[in-house]
Length: 504
Picture 1 (tube, helix red, strand yellow):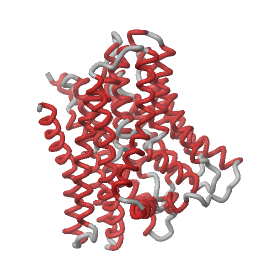
Picture 2: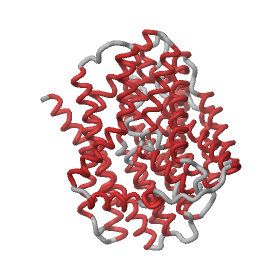
Picture 3: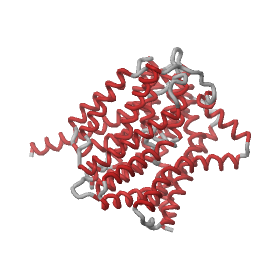
């Protein structure tokens, strides 16, 4: 009964988090565009399904993923085996990313854009391997008690340098591939591993040392994918890519055809099995290490299993809701706003929808709660979410301006990360790891579909724009500016505290 009441609370919480998106779309639709979308009913149903999916997912996290992640971290910390921890970190990072649907979609696009120079499978393995390696490195950082400052400063200096040499066709996709590695399952699981380790080791601070794994998981694929792009564009040859072009360019059309071809029930079952397949590598890694390495039974196994089932069903409902509601809304609104021929409304919509989608982001809600707990009253979860949402709103607005103006993404990205590097020097240590993690969690299942649809919609309908080059990259802007906003807030807060101390 208590769990049912808790679920109802989560359902109410999920609806309140999605309400900003509904308000933004409603205001622009009725006051600016002044017309009702043709498919408004499926969109409305889709949004309600998203609410249900988020509630189920969050309930599953609390029952299954967070407890088992912390338990494994505690057990490995007790064993004190660094190689074992590194292997576990690598396997967990690799498994969480390799079957990620958003990464599969990005990899397919990359193969087409490069005219076959880039292999979709190679790209997926490269990104998954990068995340696995960086989670292993992050585990070592926590064990040694290193500050995240120098890891991120050196890493993003490399990112900026590589971006300068990377071909234009690969830059936006490289940054997007870094963003999509941090999905709705990966973020809580990796965060649980980091926080669990920091809590288990004497002398470690959960806020300073426990966070940072997500930020590293975003950064390293940006480097590896761009280096791969430089190599294949320098030495690789273009080849004809025919198979899958239709599906990759227009997945919604393909899915509609497939749904009509079979029964609705079989289609639902197929999608549910695909969702299970995406989570299966993570479950396999956890079971192998739990029973073959630690050799202990999972405590309250029925609750954990129930939690994983809720995560899978919640994710499925979430994806169905996205296809029915959020993605069509993004494309429709972009097309309608361009039709008004007043760019100010496009900028306003980009800002408003960036803020609203981020406030509704499940991974951000989860990380915000964990940060508040770890900070022990030093940070407020709601303030964190507002800062991140404001950063995303500004970032997407600047990214939309880039598409409208037709500027190269290179200089925007390089300038953005130069500011990030400078702020990393100036920021108080307690906020750095969290700030980078928050930059990663903004590019998850709520934000990505709407933002991607907006970018592709703009690039499609603005004359002279290349959809494959100009349509991507908004996710990168959604990652950079939350880091900036959170660090600026921490710097300002520290300055205010020092000033009050001097006055007194």
